[in-house]
Amino acid sequence: MDPGTIAIVLGSAVSAMGALQAGQNAEATANANAKNLFQTANAERLAGIENRKRQKRANSKLAGKNRAIDPDKLDLLEDNAMEAALIEADITHTAEIKATSYENKGRSEIYRGATARKASYFAAASQVLIGGGTAFAGSGSFGNLFGSTPASNNAGLGLQFRTTAIA
Image (cartoon, rainbow, N blue to C red):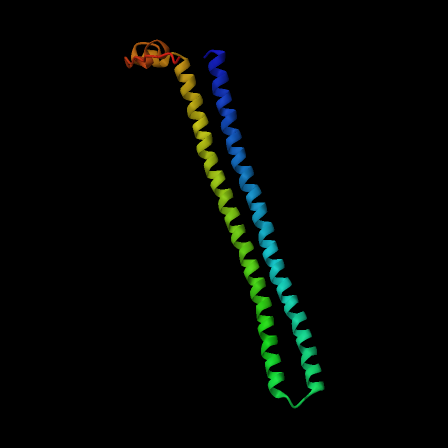
């Protein structure tokens, strides 16, 4: 095998390894991003729990103040209690929506990483095939198969091309 063919084969192998490494790196990065997103989702849920507790304490203080001002207005106390419960539920709901959004982004990152890894297999295989085909063509093996060299007779297929100069 001549040095040029060896260089082609080695270059293709290095390119294939690079493609595989790029896929692995993309997957690792995506998984790290997903981990951060899942941690953020958990933090949002915990923040929602704490915010709800704060609101519940504020609601209790307001209820106590209202009872102190006028303990006979039960409808006002009931309205305040219902409104307080809605505010608390809204806090929890908002936190859950944010957390779910982060989890969905995390799942998307995992999918993106897996897809990049799979695509790297095809890129690596393509590099190997290109290098092997180029080395095979450069060695004159096509000429042996078809009775001529690729450069002299379009791989022995008898094709002829005309070129036209553009003025």
